[in-house]
Image (cartoon, rainbow, N blue to C red; front, side, top):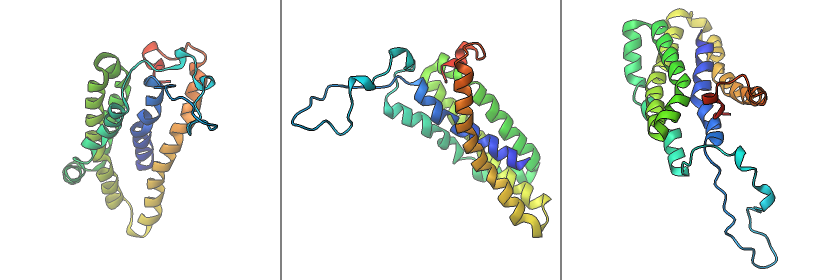
Length: 196
């Protein structure tokens, strides 16, 4: 359960880092003029610019994108210590379930928050998502401490924590599967197609 909890947590946490590249319009500038015998260091040419239909739908600056991606951690850092206190009172199972379930709902609502509130509502969504995920670490380690015998904690602890790497790898794998599904144009509702 804890392995799958960490796997889901990291998939939901890092999904927007990949999806934002397709949500935001790509910023290109060809204002540099070539002087001398060498091309500019970025070697940008007209052939590098894709069709406008491949661009995202939102014009967010790099600063706004940075705020969106970092807003998760604003909430995440706050709830670690209170999460430990909640786990002591309620137990690890309930806290883990509440953290994963609430984060799942917020991840599902991410496209709607972008469509109806733009970057502001997305930032609020990510802060609340971080608040919910801050309880997950405390609950997993509470479960490990109370359910696993002392002699087996190291082995099973490593197995549980490997869910982090599996979740992170899973995002990249699913990115290619979703691109394949999206190319069929009939499996995803229109509001979710802007993610891929």
